[in-house]
Structures are given as C-alpha cells and as structure tokens.
Image (cartoon, rainbow, N blue to C red; front, side):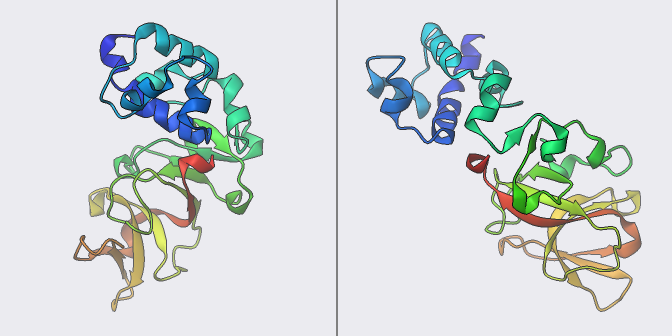
Length: 228
C-alpha cells in the first residue's frame, strides 16, 4: 500500500468500526495505547501510519483492496461471515449483491442477473428477490438514500404495475438506454408510463413508451450496509 492509499483509510476504518458496533476504545484498544489518536484519523484529519495500519488490517482481517479503493468486500473471507451473518459466499444461501451503479447499466450489453456478485445476502424478507443493488445519487431521497441497498425482483408481466411504487427500469436504445430507479405512475395514454423522482428537488416527469422498457424490476425494499 502506498502513502496515497492510506489517506482514505481513516473514514473506511470508521465504517468498519461502526459495522462491528464498537466504540473507539473497544476497536483500537487491543491494538494501540493512545486510542484518542484514532478520532482524527477516522475523520480524515490525520493519516494512519504504515505499521499501525498493518496491525489493524491483520487483527480484524480487513480486505486491503477495499480499505484502499472502497471496492470489493470489507473483510477477508475468514471474517466476512462472522461479522455479517447475513452475508454468505454460497449462492444457494441468499440473494446476490451486485456492486454496480444502476445508471451505468445498458440494456444492449448488460444482463443484471448474469453479473458476478460480490457476495450473497441471506435476509429472509427479501429472499424472493433477484438482486441487491447499491443506491447512487439522491433523486429518490428520502425514500432511498445514497449508500443504502435496494432489493429488486424482476417483473415478468410488465402490463401489471403497482402505481406509485419504485421500480428499476432498463429501457432500450429508443429511450436512450435509460436505466434508473423511479416511482411509476399511470399516463393518460395507455401506451406510455410516467417516471417520477421522490425527491421534490428533482422536478419534472419522464414519459416513457411502454414498449421501450426492456427489463423491469420492482423495488421490494431496502437495507443499510450496517444491516449486512
């Protein structure tokens, strides 16, 4: 790891500590004597030293790639299931978490259900879903906040829509390959559909031809990363 990588360690160490529901003293007390030094580190004011970062990584089995880049699993495989009992590596034990921004999905080159998941989540209320996806942006706030995770299930009959509910819509090239999570409302023309943000700061509806919708997933609910 380089010095530049360690600049991001503090806030991510805080995320790990909160995921474990531990205080500063509980988390760092087993590693260092001066626990108060970690508060400015977690807040990004100070950079953690190389030796100290190695001690924390080793003690808590932290995934170094995640700590440096924010991608991948937070913990190494040996720690992952212990900390997050809802998380499993076995596909038969849960729903896949796919770490991709939904807005980057293109219907012409992407199959959501064939993407390789980072892990599987076994959370009974949403075990009938097809995938978990992270929320990016705030167009759906406060219904779904950036950083939360939504559980989606594909709609087979796209003619049957629960108006006012949130859906992940993947449209074709005739709709500019738009992919987004929005509330759906009935249009006065039966061949069209209304897409609307739940954030009042995002004004204006998007009108979409029903025939342009290639894939449709209802959002069954959400979880936070701390629930994993």
